[in-house]
Length: 255
Image (cartoon, rainbow, N blue to C red; front, side):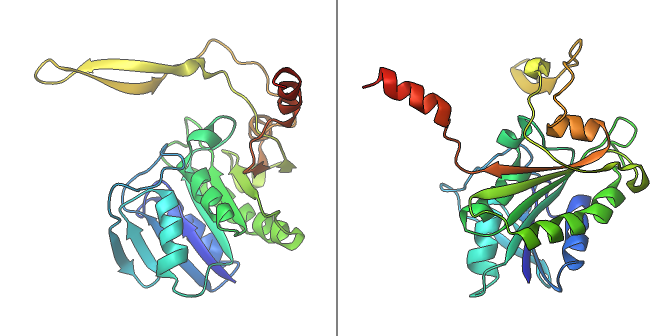
């Protein structure tokens, strides 16, 4: 089985070594094609107006000056030659990708691009807490990642579905189990604009985050609830985002 690994944190991020180690527990034919620089939050960006620069780091390790989407296309259509990968693994992201994160995440996008290319694809993310922010519990992803991928592959991944896997911010022996979940929804009131001025007095801005007073307890079947309870969250996400229920209502008013 040929595995293509990518991420959005960049070729030198610790998570790319974790995803490669997970991949090597599944196969000896592992390739890494990852962004040269941090691409967190770029979503499914595709470089159409700039050339892609490809740099070989060492055997089967390549850096692309582009997005995770670019990396999957470059890896599958160019770097790997005539033999396409059998599976795409994106991650392991430093930080969870749940709820609305899936819209912004470059990690998710890397896996989505693999799905678009017709390949079984997984996005893997390691949640961290305040205490583990500087040193996430990568061992949790290492211990549970291979079996999750192996068992899902035995079942078979539907053609237009990407598998989003999130590992809780706890030690492997503290994990309660594996939960199949749906995408949750957060209170996005924590987004803010941080206004500053440069050395010349000109304004510039950062998108920042702030704490909210309190959030509703997420439904038990969501990715948010699973991680909060120390479960590995496995969420199948579909490429087709059509709201079929509302489509029926639209047909009634747009006749």
